[in-house]
Structure formats: structure tokens, C-alpha cells
Length: 425
Image 1: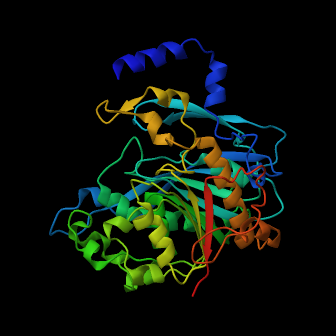
Image 2: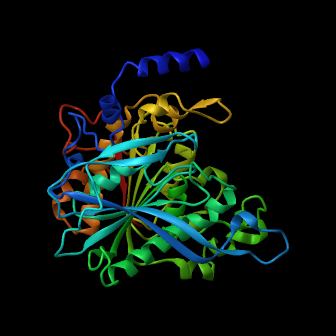
């Protein structure tokens, strides 16, 4: 490992700073990218918001047999939006990598603090990263969707970031609560006189993209409460922390929000750990677009994401599968060049592997996901029937084989992909 690291470091010294800028881009587009991966017509701006969720359960400092401690929970959010600017491009500075130590610069299309475009409100998309992660892990969705007329808010989930990853129980409890809080905050800011988002956000048409643990939270947000057994497991649910997320419980029913209209769940975690019952998954009524690799070794595929897809029987849902793809399929940005040598887990792992797949090119997966997520959100959140041909070829027959032409893909460039659809029963 040390010899390999030294060789890579030596090679990197041969390159100029311009190569770092090129390799750390979040807005890449391959020549074979499907049609809807192309950026939209809007110039885009980006701002960082520091928010406080007051009087929340402090999941890290729970003591068995005592009342839950409370604290004011800090959350940082990156917001992309259609902007009124002649400029294109900017830098995201000092972004932490998987090792929680190395800070890098990422480059994209958005202009920092650009004035928002006036005149209309746009549907909201909330992005929720994995454990650990950060608000930039899926920033390719942020820029791409904002260029197509969405407000996009990507969350730094406290206790679940590269820099501050804490006990897993905090992630299990806070994921859905963070997602709902950001929806409430964006609604508040839309009505706040003088705020840069005033009258810009249509939160009645909100989509949610969740990856891994973000996908776990997205399923709870969509309606799938967890099992009582999990809520009674001390390791995951100290002092019954997760009781309010149990399926068919009054607290979970109260938690659900009709403003969430469309869900994208990428490799959602939990099925192989028995977090969901058949009834819990049947409680999901919202449309869902699932994305997974067929050999996902973290969330599972046949007994993980695909099984969730099959059991959300009251939802109109899609499943996009990357054949032989693993857990990183579609979601993370391509590995920043510094991730090639940054080590973590007591120097046993290279951060590069956190952003890549052994089989698929990460940028290609990003572009494919951008294509389908664009079609899906446009169809549901914007009622755009022109998106139907990009989705309707998915088969509903029992063997799951596609029929017809994959619109938007050229020269058999859909090879290795499978798109399935099941309607609500």
C-alpha cells in the first residue's frame, strides 16, 4: 500500500493545477451520455445555509433509563437554484473527503451567491447522502436539476458526515427528521420577506433523493415505518429512540407529509437488517424510482433494494439496475483526484473506492441517473407528459425484460442496464 501510494503521489506531482480542476469537476458529461443528462436552459447559482433545528433529541448522549436529552441540532445545506447571472462556473472550497481529514476543491457550473431568477416558483428537490457522506456527495444532481428549473437543497447530516460521523443510532433517528425539517425550512424561507428564496420555492411539489442511509430515511419519509423489533433493539434504538418511526404508530402517521410527491431511493439501506415488514412497505403510497447495482454488498439487491421494490405494492414504482454494479452505483460524484491517495480506516482503505465502482465508470453512471431522474421528476412534479417516452418502455411483465427502444440512448448504449416498472395494486 505504501509503495503504491508513493508512486501515485509522484505521478500527481507531474501534473499542473489545471488537471486537478478538470478531474474534480462535478458537472461532467460523457459523449455517450443519454439525452436528458444534458444541462437545462437555466444558469444556476449556489448558496450555503446554516440552519438550526431547535429542541431535538440528542441521540449521541442518551443515557439508559433517563429522559432524552435535548439540543439545538445544526444542519448545513447547499442550495442550488436558477440564477440571473451572465457567468458560468465556480469552485466549492475545502470539501472533506471520505477520510474526514483531506480537504479539496470541487469545480462546477454554479455561480456562488448569484442572484436568483425572478418571476416564478420552482419545485423543490431535497438530497440526503449516505453514512458517512456530505452535501457534495451527490452534487452532480444538485447542479443538473437546478439547470432544469428546480430548487435543490442538499443536506449535511450532523453526526453522519465524514468529519463528524457518530453513533449509528443518531443516523437512524435523524435521517427522516432532517429531511422533513429542510422541507419545513424551505417553506418558511419561501414566505420570508427579503429572503433570496422568497416566492421561489414550490414546496407543495417536492421530490426527495436519498442514497443508502438517505434512502433509508426516504422510505420512512415516504410512509414505510420500521418494525417494532428494531425499535426495541437497544443498539439501534437506545431507550426506545426509534419508537416514533414504527409502522402504523400514531407518531409516524403524524410525521408523514403530503408535500413530498416523488421519491428517488438509491441503494436504500435496511431490508437485509429486517427494518421493514411487508405491511410497513405496503404503507408507501407515493411513487418511487429505485436505483441499484445488482451486486450491492452494503444494502443488498435481491434481498435488498429489489425486494423493497417488489414489496412496495401500493406505489407506482420503477427499478433501474446497473448490472454488476455495487453500492456506489449512480450516487457519488467521480472520485476527486486527491481521493486516489487519501487513506482512512487506520490507513486500511483508499478513499478512491468510496466514489467508484469496480465495473462501471462513475461519470457514466452519474449521467444515466441524471437522465432518468430528470424524466421522473419532470413527469411527476411538473406534470410533463413529454417525459413519458423516456420511461414507458419499462416492462411490467413478470420477467422484467424491457420492450422497445430506450429513448434517449444511442448505439446500444443502454447495455448493462435494466429498467422495470410495477404499478400500484
